[in-house]
Length: 125
Image (cartoon, rainbow, N blue to C red; front, side, top):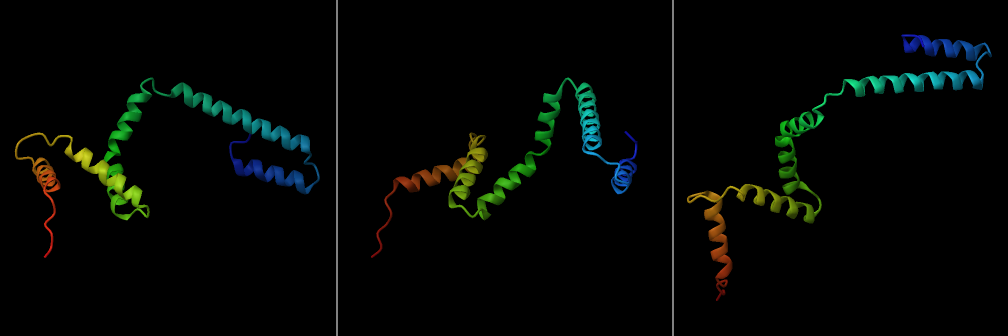
């Protein structure tokens, strides 16, 4: 195969214009391309690092902030009320995981919410 794909294309067009391009030649060209792609992917697989799982985990770790921002965005802007509610629950669960120490603002907020939940609502006169 030629190094330059444009040269290869130009040659095929020349053959087509001159009536030299047959279905067999097209199939041969497709087979050559297929073999070249297979070889390229085989070489890439050989160069693949042994610790691909670590690279993948590092990639995800580097994109955690973007994922969290997307969840927060969906929390307020998703069209579906279910999606907004689930995103809100997820954010609260994640934020409250470490809310165990005294004086933690989340712990205090949750305690207040629980206390208000147990008290009956005041009836309006």
